[in-house]
Amino acid sequence: MAFALVDCESFYASCERVFRPDLKNIPIVVLSNNDGCVIARSTEAKKMGIAMGIPWFKVRELFLKQNGQVFSSNFTFYGDMSARVMNILEGFVPRVEIYSIDEAFLDLDSLKENYNLYDFGCHIRSIVRQWTGIPVRIGIAPNKTLSKIAINEIKRTNQPTSVMYLSTEKQIEEALKHTPVHKVWGVGRRLTNHLNNAGILTALDLANVNPRNIRKQFSVVLERTVRELKGERCLDLDDDISSKKQIVVSRSFGERVSDLKTLKPIVSNFAVRAAEKLRHERRKCSQISVFVRTSPFNQNKPQHSGIKTIELFSPTNDTRDILAATKKGLLPIFKSGYDYAKAGIILNRFSDETVRQQLLFKDPDSPKENTEFMRYIDQMNTYETQVYFASQNTKKWSPMKQNMTSPKYTTNWYQLPRVN
Image (tube, rainbow, N blue to C red; front, side, top):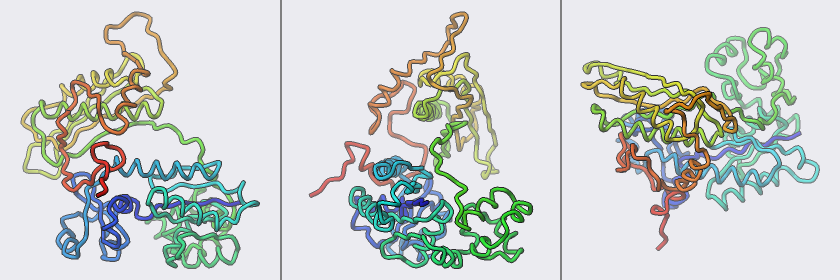
């Protein structure tokens, strides 16, 4: 039995370096929406002591003085680079579970008899780096939890190949001995405190506990973790990722919005994006909510928040229907005289897109439900928005502060990198 965990190294920072080789060995941080907090750091930035989630203004001066490079988040670019990496991985093995934007589990069971798994991992890493420019770490072990431990060992030992295969009991025991219990997959801060109080300080300590006692004292989830640390396989690849129960598209504004004329096209943009996500899930929705709120941190200003939910007679994933419901929802909750700091769209009550619910009587406001037409628009807008709806904001203005965003190198024809 063998699983591999492929983990992209400092993913957002690595994406920025792909088309900026001059940034090699330069400290890099990537900021959250509105350039508020640090959400990604290169290895060099970590060594400088830049903490994850720290407000940018607290480290800005020191970081820039040490020639650090800062970027606003560019999720369109990062998402496309992630898709390229995952597409390569899916070509190597029969089963892949995309765990996050920068992590994926691979099922190596069918390859174990015919391949040296360590060499296979090195080959995968080489191909991903050659074809995308993204460096990855690969931890190989009998199960998911131990493959996470293998990744930690790569970081701890600074493994030159960035590939580690934990195949023997001695190797696994050595890795567990050097892994603090808080670094075990699924063990959070509160649970760590309870385990430490019980004298369990390392992953090896946890592996040596009787799983049944752990189940009685804590939970069946932690029992599974203990069994996996012992080498059993309790967690299989999740081939059937369940569809989302809810889709939310919202943003906090870097600049406060106080008039409906400005707010309407912003919220319309959110609705269009939510509809695209809904079609990507191959779902329809019959409930659409719109919300707005002021900043709770600005106590010197009058406060207001509002949410309005629109129920549809029939499920739809047509952008025009969602935009119409958004307009109905926004008008009654907007109040003049307030400086709004956030707005968003929430889609609920999903059904399969192949199911069509017929109405007994024709309703003048019945959904248009032209999924095929919408997919044509999605295809045309894949890399750059070419087709807008009339209520959208088309002036490229954003309420967010993102003053240091890199080009969309791989998804926008007009921002393709140029080589002199």
